Amino acid sequence: MNKFTINSCAEVLEESFYNNFSADSQLSFFFKKNKNIGKSERSLIADAYYNVIRNKRYLEVLGSTSNPFKLILIYLIKLQGRSIRDLLPLISEEDGLWLSKIKANKLTNIDLSVKLSLPDWFWQKLSTQYNKKIALQIANSLLLPAELCIRVNTLKGKTRLVIITELKESFPDIKDQILETKISPIGVILPRGSFIQKHPLFLEGNIEVQDEGSQLLSFLANAKRGQMVADFCAGAGGKTLAMASMMKNTGRIYSFDISDKRLSNLKIRLKRSGASNISIQRISSENDNKIKRLKEKFERVLVDAPCTGFGTLRRNPDLKWRHSENSLMELIDKQKKILQSAARLCKKKGLLIYATCSLLEEENEKQVENFLSKNSDFKLLSKSAILKKYDISIDDKSYLKLNPFENDTDGFFGAVMERFK
Image 1 (cartoon, rainbow, N blue to C red):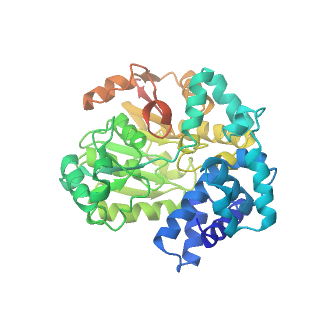
Image 2: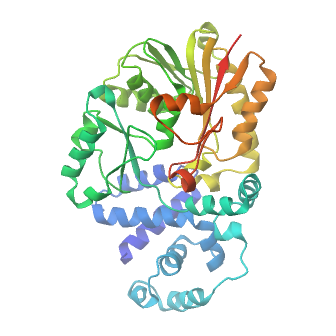
Image 3: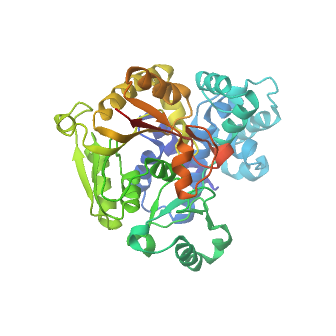
């Protein structure tokens, strides 16, 4: 990094720490304001920006500072291994002396939560929920950036093999790093930072950006041709589009969400995808009259509930600094209400799929257990029996539970419940 990229990164970090916007939105806004910054410089700024946010707590303790410029310098010498000599032309003499002391500081008596750059309360829950060794491995995996994962849109007719062949032809420098996903039969992995937004395959709707774990949730819904399907918290519609592809454009998918912005993004993706069986539905809340009128009309109801998103910290590291135990409790209450309301849409013998991108039991298993204890007309089904229909094998547990360390996907949870009476 040169002086310009360090100062630019410090500027966007300061804005990010001050504002309550998501990290990716803040960075995107910064680049729109500074259109003169070149592609290679943008890459350097973005890389340092996300890595400082990932390791923010550790860097702050190392330097006893929250100054963005100084955090970047600490990151460069302690985590990137840059020499102070290389940085001297870019910094003041005073900063050079200060950095020398930081480099010599080994910080041997440091709490694990600090070393892992996690809030104490989250590390406590993670290390209680898993054995400490697994918890440590998961936490370390959350500090690593994720590769780019895309889904092949089978509606367009091209197979995964054809897509991979075309991508390798377009990106010969990284062709050996363009791979099939290990679990999903329709996923492709590319190196982080691969720019596909202007590639013909993307513009023509043959591929969509979607993590492998999210793809698996779409398979878990097991939507069939001709069925009525509800995507209750559709967001920007990744799983809606995946299910439309699985249903071969038959039946009907109702995509519900409270956010106009998210649904607008879905409309853009929908136009590209070639899907024609999707009805976009803006609702005011989980108790909107539209929900009441559609009681027991659906064979499949997918609830990808709002959550902490801690399973996606590789991509969204700022989430760990934007949530607290209080916000977790608020989300848990919201999830209960949303799941209960969505269940009304499910007809007899229909499936209710509850999902989050969280790693926490309170948002996952405990929510399902709480729901089943209050709704005797639903029963839990084994996810393995469903996924095996698609030649997907993970484990024989009832729940779908994914994390970056064990599965090399974002952290996802999924449970399938059947309305049997």
